[in-house]
Image (cartoon, rainbow, N blue to C red):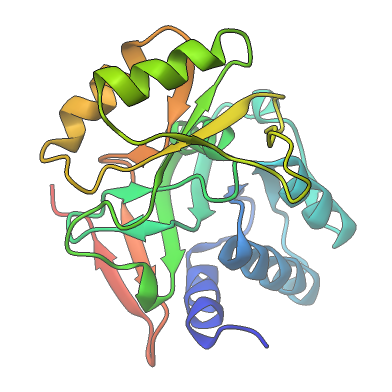
Length: 227
């Protein structure tokens, strides 16, 4: 059964799509619904839309539904990027990476003029940290990065595993380490600390990136970032 909140948020995001736009496609269950709805609208209205995706899964899904999907480097910039979030606070900062696509998601987000997040109400939180923070790391030396996260930062890290117990690998063949940031007061400082550490490619703290949050409700709630 489709989550009604996710469906409502994905449907509301369609109103931001206009003919001849370049659209970023996110990754995850809510983004999947948006991709399916976008493909149907493009077909029904004969729109010209060019897409760049944040994961192999989203790119293949979009192409299978008839959307034009190109590599991100073929696009100067995206008009909008529509993606989900694993947790989002009242300031529209969020944690992403539950689908292990955070590295590509952040690159695509930085290429977009406007970032739109679509979530169901359960993803809203007064303070980030109820969802573990994903960190994408190079396989080479990953144990040393793990020890840094554990002993230096006390973030209780765990390597993300696949169902068979092997280490999960991302689309770029890296590992994910999930950490606990529930007790961290300043996530901006942590974001800077993490990205400076050798071996860490990217983290799932998406600070000051979301421009519009759409919360699936009846009707959908639209919240814009206050600058």
